[in-house]
Length: 327
Length: 260
Ligand SMILES: Nc1ncnc2c1ncn2[C@@H]1O[C@H](COP(=O)(O)OP(=O)(O)O)[C@@H](O)[C@H]1O
Ligand SMILES: [Mg+2]
Image 1: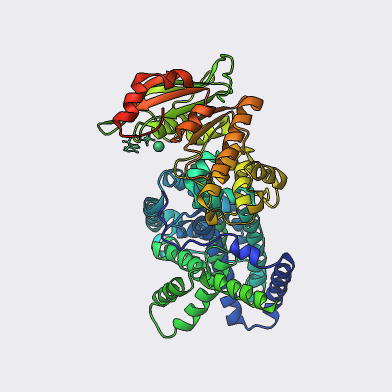
Image 2: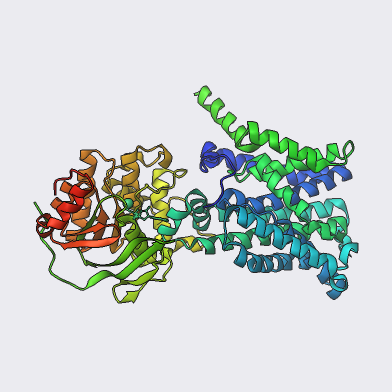
């Protein structure tokens, strides 16, 4: 059985709470707003927004595992980092431009996730968490040590083409890639495959005896999550104009876990909200503290204790209460 | 009102000389049993006799220490449980197993999606797929009115009926039911018994079930296997089992006052 470290919640609660029309209006408004943002925001805030978009995709990709399938992976940064290195290595060794490298990143990250997942899904719960952590650190060590190929701990420089250099252009590029990726992930969460993942999280034994080969589904989720994390990482490297081994490090793996928990793991929007909180606290805190992740960790702790559905879950619940009172 | 026995036909499930050891303990000891097509077959015996273990071996939850399980001509001893489910062997559990965080309707819908192979497709939307069929299955066990409720909110008897509907979702050939009417009211029992009898009579579905209610067993089973301490004690028609002195000994010996 999978360990259950998280509070039980009704998975349908979030999606049932808002009507289809309300959702369309909210999401449509947000998308339009996001496309207009570079015409009102200054450059430094634009970089912050790019950071947010990348983290949002990273967190949502992760939540396919944690929220949907109930798989607690502690090594998700490995695939994020591999996405960054796919872009960096293709650029340095073959002079492939970053936007082409980005197209390759989900395949490389997904392929490595397939190799790791093939072993990791043989166990569940804490053992799965430990195996993903161990494999993640293994990949980190390889990237760190393979100087000739990865540049080792010096990292690998990445130079975006001229047209992607202005913050506004790169923002619009990242926004488009993120929205397309999130749309794909949304379809997956609403698909029969996604429903099967929910079922496995709910009751693994019952899932088996309705005819689901649960390991294959878990492996599928692991590969898809890894592939999309790869896309997120591929957008990170050109932003920093560098791919660093620390992108694969286990401390980086803590970030999607914490973002998903902060926003709420049983709604699609939860990890996106979590990413916003994360990026914003980082921005505010870095000026005062050397340990922004520690501060964010404390925030998540408080959220998990007092708002078990995460911030997004709490907002939806409050909306529900308001609407019921209005009737 | 014993149901008429079906004419002899090839076994759809045969268990041959199966032993199941847990450490040094023999939960099943050289047990053989066959299930005919369309047959209603009851397994009875005192607690700890090995009834659930036998169903677990047939459904694939447990791999036997020794012996074989066949499904028709196919040896399925090493076939993983989810494949057996897809082959047409459905089951319920002694401790009812449903998706408590899904609605009642979603429970059955998921079973239909899984059985029809939809779940392999990451872009095939779940939506309202199989709504009518799910509704029919729920209507069959007479809980259609509860479709929108969460599985976890149901009373024990309703849960059992939901699990029964889940088991029926893939049009199974074989139903393995572990105490299907335990904790149910008289009216609920009638519903479940009625469905079992009609599946057997009209669609030649085979039902292997364990049950503590001896009257229910003798009224409905075509054949009965009595188990005791991991061994098959007696097998036969209700009449033969009823008059077997060994059966009386087992039940009286256990201090059970069942009227055999
Ligand atoms: N997984 C297991 N590990 C160890 N012992 C088990 C296991 N499953 C069943 N047993 C033991 O096997 C015996 C038969 O159990 P079971 O098949 O559940 O009996 P029944 O269903 O007839 O009441 C019991 O003594 C039980 O404790
Ligand atoms: Mg039992």
